Length: 71
Image: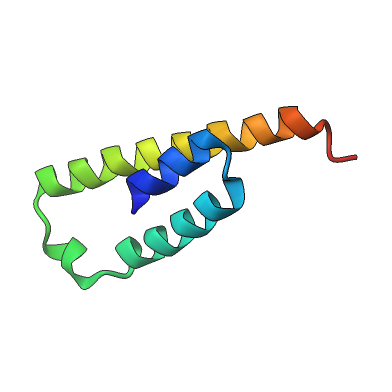
């Protein structure tokens, strides 16, 4: 779902991608299995998080440029 959030963010669906990103970030953080995970699993999760947050950030930037400034 994090990869989907990144792709949706790149496509410009910012509200949906932010909601997915928040839900999935919370579920990974509170998951009890992350304390027992190996280094490689944590590295893969980190790479997926980087992709998701980058996609959402680029999508938000597109929305701001499309609609002008907020003020």
